[in-house]
Length: 505
Image 1: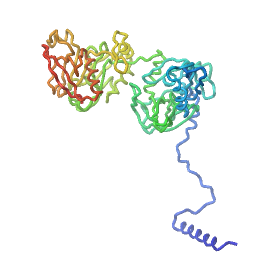
Image 2 (image 1 turned 90 degrees about the horizontal axis):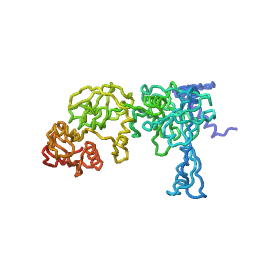
Image 3 (image 1 turned 30 degrees about the vertical axis):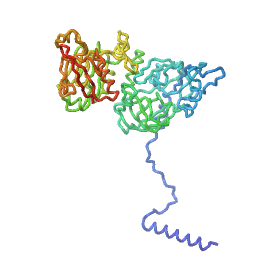
Image 4 (image 1 turned 60 degrees about the horizontal axis):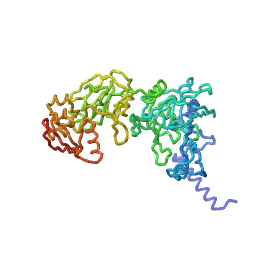
């Protein structure tokens, strides 16, 4: 028997439903099971299944100094990116101090992908295999092959490995064109996050042309596809299954993915891989200049309408343009048909150019745009020159060898070596020493202080200078110290001295 309370509740419910039907709030119910609309994105299962076989795990081992004492407990071998790694690093590695102990094997894991099944060529990141004693490539079906190192490039963080193609049936993928990728395009990452094995994540291109200060050719693709430690060296695919990036870095306070990952674009990586396969090393084009950004102030002083391009701050002694083709103070706005919008564009396009190629370079010199023809040298030869193999042992404060410059542009002045030629040109006395001012830009800080071509800089901030490189290094050091002005001691053609203060903002 139904109680009065339940009966009244039932009546209220029936009344409410009837009212809802009457005003059209709800539809007439049906006993037919409703069909769920499939409005989500299409599945990527077929694409992932096709690509997984080409993506590999890279495992390396390295012999390192262990903890001190015969009774020391060896550190557990953890996959790179394990959440316990920091704890074990602190406990095992730091407790032995600097005394060291027995050597032991440590392992790390990363990712890679096969690009040539016939030759057994695998691509990964340089930092995945750096300093490794042994490298193994693990395939998705459980097969493991020993790998040999073909070549590495630290500037782009790319490494090429080789496995025996007869040891396993390989599946390869190919590079696509990263320049066609747009912000918002779908991408897929496959890799070995935290040592878990083949893992697929999907996202979009979040941004392009990212500079994260990891190297001289930064031009990363940013993606929100989940990339974690262990994904390094793995591929970033487009919707067609082509590799348009090599996953390399993440930004994360926690060490895990927060949706900000970076990939080397295939446009850059493919050329490096080809050179490493062919030569075992890179062979990049070299212009032989030191450059700096073009600020609004610099653009105005050089008579440019807008701040763009790369300012030639110095010409490398013995380099491809140490013949006056390009001069300190020039602004390079186009190289081999490619616009140079900002300073960091130039090193990348030069490095991608073949050694020995004759290219047209558009410069702005004293407010006038002109085109010069330059034959490129080889960057690696320039680095040998800088490292002292050709007699130069100068090093900057970071320990990196830097080549001398024959001319330099600083504070609106072009300065050069004081030699017999410049002494004769400007009529400078034999007993005057220092660095000669060969040109002064109109409306520059130097012009405001009345500095004239033919004057000689003998000291900067009470330190003697003898080469254009000395001038550049001294001005750079003052800027790093936060100084706003530089005190110069100048000598006239006859040796009369005067002090001048020049602003450096």
